[in-house]
Amino acid sequence: MTATVKLLSLATATPPHDLAQDDVFEVAHQIFIDRFPEFVRMGPVFDHAGVRHRQIARPVEWYLQPHGWADRAAVYDEVALDLFCRAAEGALAEAGLTGADIDAIVTVSTTGVSTPSLEAKAMTRLGFRSDAARAPLFGVGCAGGATGLALAYRLAKAQPGAKVLLVCVELCSLAFHMEELSKTDIISTAIFGDGAAACVLSSEDGAQGFATVAASAEHTWAGTLGVMGWQVRDAGLGVLLDQALPPFVRREIRPVVEAMLARQGLRLEDVDRFICHPGGMKVIEALEGALGLGQGALDHEREVLADHGNMSSPTVLFILDRARRTGLPKRSVLTAMGPGFTASTVTLEAA
Image 1 (tube, rainbow, N blue to C red):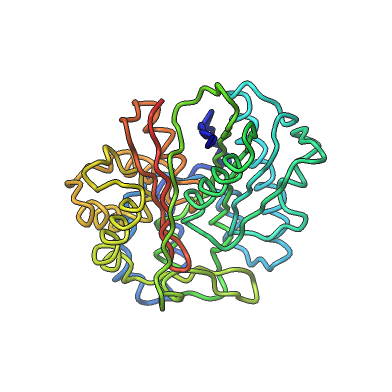
Image 2: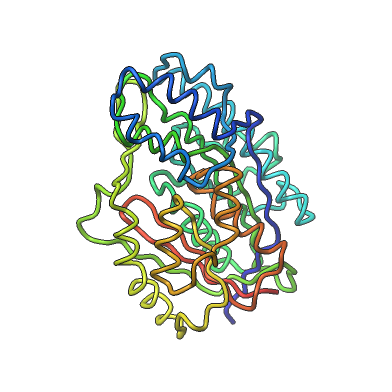
């Protein structure tokens, strides 16, 4: 008999330093105006990004000083680990579990490097068992919320009765650099924030959750390695982001999603709600157009983008959290895109 996997809980966490978009613009103006003349022309991106606030790992003054790999790694170790633990503790508490109940931990993070990985560093604080399986994922970027959820689902499904913890944590702000400036740096400054999200999945008989994970799928386009990723700079990781992403989404995403659904015996019309990683405002609009959702349909996506910015992998789980609190429809499809260039989907059925 095939195991049924339930989503038991979901929790989010953000760092304490809240920054309004107007303040981000003022700081960016000070930084960019003399060193990057094109900033005057690109300044309106801050108004059109759809971001009102975002939370970041350090006070804004920290980012105005030069920092190398060691400084950035130290902040990642401290702040990412704290966010990991806070999000995980929230998810465990909602599920009525402790760390000792968890059989496997999936950690998703692409904005910092930590070896041992975050779940190993959190083992004592969260009380994970010594025999818990660990699966850290690096390099999946903005797709990580869906990709990580899909992996957690497969791990739970493969071991009936298992309880799997997924934690996505990203510190996108650490990719801001004073040393080298580009158009991508300006766009990144306008949209990215920091945050974490965690959820618990279980294939235990009789498990009660807010949704059943029905299926997952993934598609990687050939010849698209340059669409999104990291540039390794002397001072740390820097964002690689193709500005032609919205047209790509508008052109490519529908047939891929249709093919993913077809393998599950579904059509677009069978999906009551798409839960999408927003990327940015133009990507939201491209998704609405490509999937025939109607302008404004991705309301939770706009709200999360406005309140937190694009946090990379946790963002789609923030959106899922809002969607479940207002009531999930019968069938929803969670989807996110990231480096590869890859689209990942997870099909959910409401409890």
